[in-house]
Image 1 (cartoon, one colour):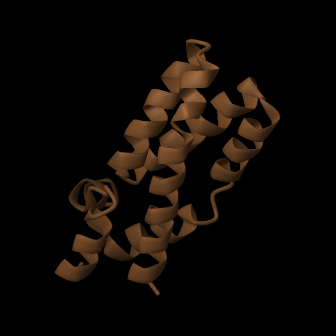
Image 2 (image 1 turned 45 degrees about the horizontal axis):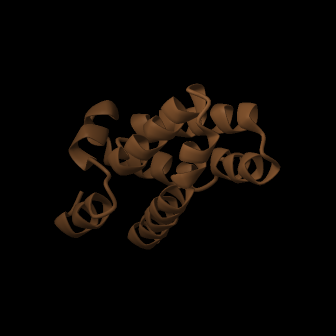
Length: 119
């Protein structure tokens, strides 16, 4: 992967070398899965659960999204979601939902950078 692409991805908290390690150093495979992240439904499900006050749905969506982010070495988003999942499991809805503006910003920025990097 060229330095420019790597730098862009790292700017949003993606550990490119860690991700490449998971993908057997196959850059094309990593690119394919990063692009697939853009279509992952869990962010939308999390937003829906938030709007509906659906605690169970929020736990499921946040946990699933955390797993995807972990597999793709999206450390920034992963850390936010791990904290949110812990708060939700501790039944701290207010604390968990207080993280949403930060999660929203990190998610939107990550998606934008993935689109721009692999356009």
